Amino acid sequence: MAAAPAPAQPKGATGVLVLADGSVIWGMGFGAEGVAVGEVCFNTAMTGYQEVISDPSYAGQIITFTFPHIGNTGSNPEDIESANPHALGCVVREAITPAASFRSTRNFDDWMRAWGRIGLSGVDTRALTKRIRMGGAPNAVIAHNRMGSFDIKQLTAQAKGWPGLEGMDLASVISTTQNYGWDDGLWTLQGGYAVHSGNPDGPHVVAVDYGMKRNILRNLVAAGARVTVVPAMASFDEIMSLKPDGIFLSNGPGDPAATGVYAVPVIQKVLNAGVPLFGICLGHQLLGLAVGAKTVKMQQGHRGANHPVKRLSDGRVEITSMNHGFAVETETLPPTARPTHISLFDGSLAGLELTDMPAFSVQYHPEASPGPQDSAYLFEKFVGSLR
Image (cartoon, rainbow, N blue to C red; front, side, top):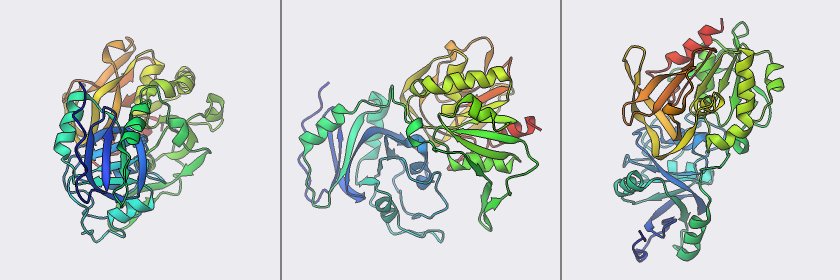
């Protein structure tokens, strides 16, 4: 169905979201000026907007926050999940207010501007979210110009011309380019991030960075592991030369099937070598592909900090943090891969384990940041199995 005629630009509008079907959504720009093209998704979390925007899994995406008050606790240098924010920008309901938190060191508007990320406020985010739920995540352009000067025809063409995330490998683009060690532990209000000096006597976990959130590494260290991070395109021989006791497959952006072109053969060799393996999010999808399952792009994806997941072994329900637009199709799992968790929102696969090899994975984020910590035990489970 064709989009309705573009509404006239309201007086004073300094930002706009232009969808690939020609729909135009006006608002007030904040953060950096400029233009960015990507996929529009929505996140239902009420807190943690700084962690969300800096999550590498959001590369190539524009985030619509469903909670109306975003930015009211400002920003700080601790609540980030990567060296640079990876989301292209965000769409919010209310205008950004001055920071109201003793931890804030910079207003959210200033933080977005400093990192070159575009924001759009004054948008009916409930209507936009409903549109995504009904029609899927659209490609779009977000633009901010303080003079209110926009070429809507050109922006529409940009949105139409963007190929979309399906078939796109982004992990190799945002991954680290060299190995490094990690020894920061979990954060506390009193002491900041704990330092564990690399846990010299702990089992050695080699973490493959497909777009790693830092809190995953913190949880591995807190569970007692020595951690070395390697690039997404590290070879099997490069990984094994580090003498790992276990291997971790990280979260990340893009289409798992595209990343799997180079990642799956390595994972299959790891499995055949009998090295224990744990995967989260994209890592979960890649493990599924490695054992012969298939992945599919979801209609709207799961993104938020309140997603109920059922643990099939005992029926326990965990409230989890999620951020994914692709999923492993349960019906394509081989007999040697057993579902361990399912989403109670839509029944999609949220975890699996292999019955013939020491490997398991979850689709959700047990490291939270933001979100509940119901599933943090999985890090203890993995690291504990390596001792």
